[in-house]
Image 1 (cartoon, helix red, strand yellow):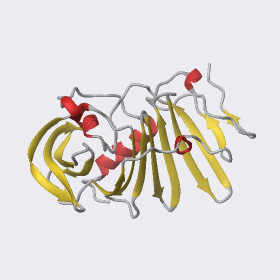
Image 2 (cartoon, rainbow, N blue to C red; image 1 turned 90 degrees about the vertical axis):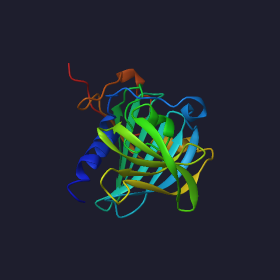
Image 3 (tube, rainbow, N blue to C red; image 1 turned 135 degrees about the horizontal axis):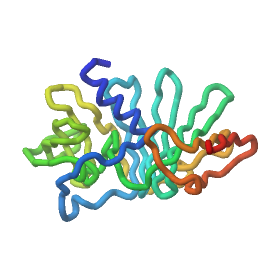
Length: 226
């Protein structure tokens, strides 16, 4: 990964673990562009990753499945319960780390909904284009994660491609997209995972009582420091 891309992905990975608080005010798009999508599945090509990333969304729940260092990992952000779950499976070991998560919407590292980007940046329609055979509106964005660039959004207001200003390679590009109901099981820790509840990490916030994940046998619960 090049030095120019590292700041983006440092923020993206930190975002999965901490979920950044909203740092800037946005110029929102009015009308149908402001409506978030309830359920979707997307397979996304992400710059710097050898294999595509799978993203599932249902209401206030988002799941990201990726492979880093040859190890499959999943990140589940549940804003309804105020928790962030990191699933890791290596050999016979299956661990679910549960962190507190601010229920307020913050900056999303991989914004697929145009409405999310619109609340964090200024957008300007500059034309039309195609991404993997899908027509989309080409827009300039300014102010998202202190960056500027171009995005192309479908008629369903899904961002199909995001490119940082000054770079030819897209930061991410949607390879497959399905606007369909997602099974609730995707947004829970599987029963065969050992669950470790972490009271707090870094700048993350949340109430201990908001952590309502199922506790299978062998649970490790770290005590809250006085």
